[in-house]
Length: 635
Ligand SMILES: [Zn+2]
Image (tube, rainbow, N blue to C red; front, side, top):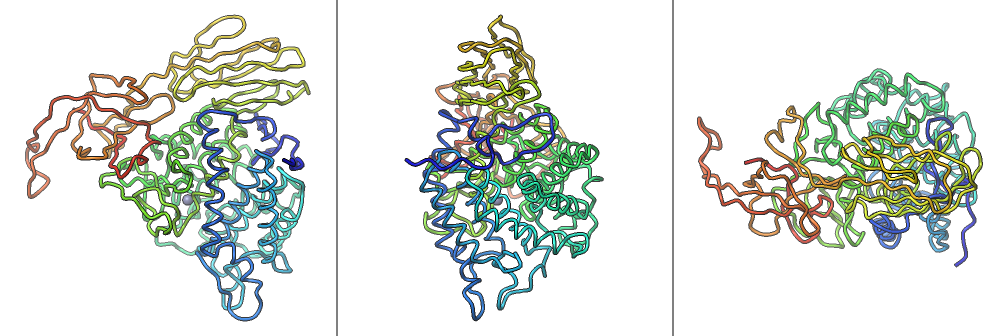
């Protein structure tokens, strides 16, 4: 197979390349996932999900829109929602990372072909969008609140960044630069004083500035961040908070409103803060995210509990049934946590990334890579139903994984994350390397002082808690190797070339003059455990959940068991049982009544205690129609 020439990023490609920060991300050419939990998902992404997304976007006319707007006379025959361009861009981004990961010439050709398609729709002044400005369409930027034009442009820029960092700088970068110039001309200091209802242009402009060195793009991103929060967008029936336009970014105390919008904006604000040395802005966003994690996040790491406005609820409003937890919000939260990890080095952000990866990202996609969850409920009361593989679904809350939704933001979002996942595992710091996520991976990079280091990480994680890191090549001399002990691992052990020692949660550093063949081993205790909710989360008071390592477990019923009547025995801790986890439980049949309230507790008939097998939450709804719950009421 002919290899695609490496791109402009010597590391092989990274989604985020800050010029400052505690940590420097390694690229696709430096870290390769070779086996295990995530390798399976990366291969599936490359072998099935990308083609699945492409075929649906062709079938529904989303790719065809780019030629339709340039077709000439008459009204534009445009298909799909106003933001469908963004899905094509996200797919191109995912395919570009896949080219970087695999050097596939077929995929490379496909990106070239899609680039030509996209370029046909670009107006002479650089504007690019298929939903506005054409014959019979509304004028450009006439609906900033919900038109998604700048949001789409942001995804175009991110696709071009991915393409350029994994392949030769080419036409897509030129298309993106002209589009970004048009944005700066239109919305710059002397232009329209506006922001997009759906943030995303902000982090995209910063990354394009990092790639091209163009100060103007960074300045424009900073302007968009500063303009947000002054209620310049029209009042929304969900309030200005829906698009984070209620309070300036710097003054806000928590993420609120539409979850994906809030998270993308926060990503852009961190990027601007890092590039401009604005420590106050960085601290403000970090504090908002920390409070959001403490009060507005599901056990799975999922964010956004409200269906109607896809939004964060108030503090501790985290009902498990019908929990929204959009897959895109999971991806966006990883993007934000990653930026904060790079900027601050605080390992709790890597803990968050791990939680979301195993419990939102891994849950979203079906075993064949051709169906996905949009919302990720923690409690399914009515049995899911199978849906046809050739129909798109309208409603995207609850129910099964579907091949396609009318709004299909989540599938290409997961695809771009999975294709670039190896860049989220390991970073360099001022002296050495830090490993943040554990999976079978090979690392080959250079330390800040230029010395080469190669590592081989092997583990059965997350089923098994032993992680072995072997130095396979080194130019000699010592360097610090830092590993992350997850917050749940209270009695981890670190084995180094000089001995064995306990390792507390947080970063643990081994300083050693490593030689090839030296090993560091981290032993993480992977016992199933009960997890209690904060008592202020009313919806799950009196319930326990079960976790094992980073993986959340659930009870699933395929047949007659009524999970609404399930009670778990808190006196019997969960135990490992043939690939799953077992708890002691009983089913408590409640007498039916005409009115579900009364002066005394409703009479209940308890079944004998029984062993109940739980399965990883990410495995639910894969064996057929099912009901499911994560939070288990106690006896
Ligand atoms: Zn989505």
